Length: 303
Image (cartoon, rainbow, N blue to C red; front, side, top):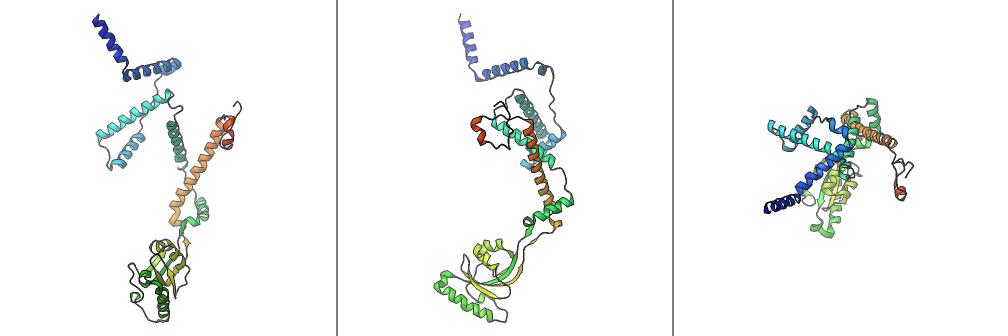
């Protein structure tokens, strides 16, 4: 009697194990699916591992670990990829992707990548690139540049005298007809005294945006100021100015091609999505209908 009692207890204990539950549920799912899809049980589905897949696995590994996989590592990668493909296919066959936002998002992203990649294979003509170049000149601008020298006055050191001292030195510099040593005037500046062919952003990073804005309005050939920076007051002598100008077409052709392909893929994606809207009849509950852009979905009857 104890023998049967122990066996019963063992079976009862086994049935409480989560792993057993998993096996039972899996078997039931398989049985139900096989019953509902009898033809699927007889036909083997094809899961293909292509040379492109293997190359992708190699490249992904190399990018991550900075060296190509060894033959043993590559074998493991391919085995894992095959397992993943088989499990994914089985999950789709069982409908496990339904009502799963993560799976839905990944599938949508994969479709978008596929469409974009296909559209970006095309090459633009020179006429199309020249047309794009003409409409995007601002994007390909070489910024205005300026060359100047300056004399610095330390506000902390001079206080209220700084403005008057600067104007006195301005008068001296304006009347000077010989070469001068800038460090002989004003206060010692920790940075550079001469700036050669710098753009406004560079000047702003050193002396502040307001100083940069003002100095680019100055004419060449005379001492001007004082103007204030984040570090003090300055007298400025502009020696050269170069206006902003677009880069040569030949210098930006590669970038133009990439931009054209991006725009084409976006336009193509919108057209593809428009075709999808025609293919499906999207039914919307009346309570949320006003929240949905009518151009995004095609609302059909039978809501």
